[in-house]
Image 1 (cartoon, rainbow, N blue to C red):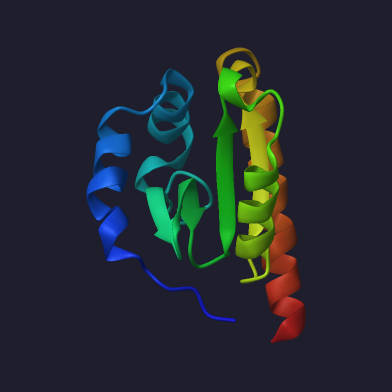
Image 2 (image 1 turned 180 degrees about the vertical axis):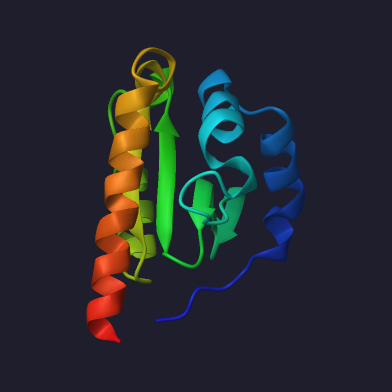
Length: 126
């Protein structure tokens, strides 16, 4: 299944980039921006089908979501959204805002490990 791009979400994605949470800004600035993670390019507030994800590495098909206080209880919509995107071949990593603030080293380690696993999986397919 191939993902598509909903142009109607472009302005909202731009607004979300400008008004991101403190955790999103921190992860972007300190970890994902400018190919800091193993040289991979990540995009902020990336549109996939009819959804906007916090961060996406298209080459690895890796999604990183930062769950704030409004995400303590995952809703049915969150599950459906994640399931639909995973059916497109994407892998999800989820972190709480608190993890970003207080345990950023563990977040970096987990992202690094996910990239390592996705690279290994990709090389096994080739």
